[in-house]
Length: 209
Length: 160
Image 1 (cartoon, rainbow over the protein chains, first blue to last red):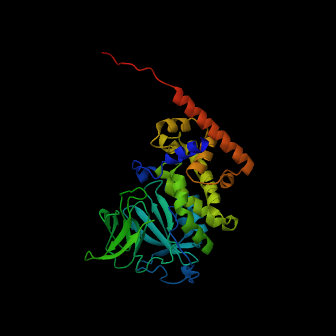
Image 2 (tube, rainbow over the protein chains, first blue to last red; image 1 turned 60 degrees about the vertical axis):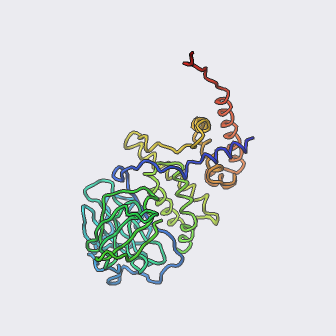
Image 3 (cartoon, each protein chain N blue to C red; image 1 turned 135 degrees about the horizontal axis):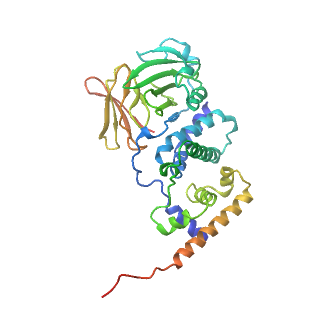
């Protein structure tokens, strides 16, 4: 009887369930939208931040103290420290109201931070914890999962979010390896991150976490 | 770092689902990320059976998030929202009437599929105390369901 009740409760599990109503990202605190997917080994590239061109993209940016990246965001600042980003990041520039910073961790993982400097809440840190780390043939872009905001490899002209059926949900151009879209998606809506060259040819199709 | 990678790969989906069962979608990414930042920082404290430990961190992170929001602004319906049982309105009503503590232990067993020993780790109580809490929660849920079932509203508005 009591086990029946627990089974009844288990059957009424709300997740997975119908997708909740979309809430604009603007309304929420965007914290460490962080870290990762999968990984097995730590690359042997240590102290990568001290090497020239270590980001692996043409836009190498200019070095700034990590403490200046997300001022007042103690949680994000702490996250950067936890990721062993080091004492500096490369400021890659601003695009459509978003400042971009990037660095490799001591373990060689690519991390970037965004700061919507005109808004209070939209800030975040994301590190690619995959073994096949950005940029690589299969990983031509790295983005926050809820919106096209990230960094693309050289040669990528456009990035897209596609759903499970391959339908394009959002598309935005890449400028100086950076891209920003103001469209927001709930977790699971976008299934793939697709990169295209200037001719519209698909370079890579990455499954989103 | 390799251990963190393995823990992340193995458990991120479960942690995400755990959070989605307790919080609005707008908080999920933040809370999941925070959980793994804590795991990274305290990797030496993470036990071999990591999932209950991660759930415990997620539980505290959610509580902190709610506290933080309630300090700055009145708790909005969105932030205070908790997913409820679906497809069974009677059960949902009975479940909603339980205390937070009762709901949580029932969720851990019924939705997360944890053993009572694992649930005790999440709730940071002894296995014995957890067992007692679980059985009492089930009894209270059963009582509320029975009360709901015995309530028969008078038919009305049916005339010829």
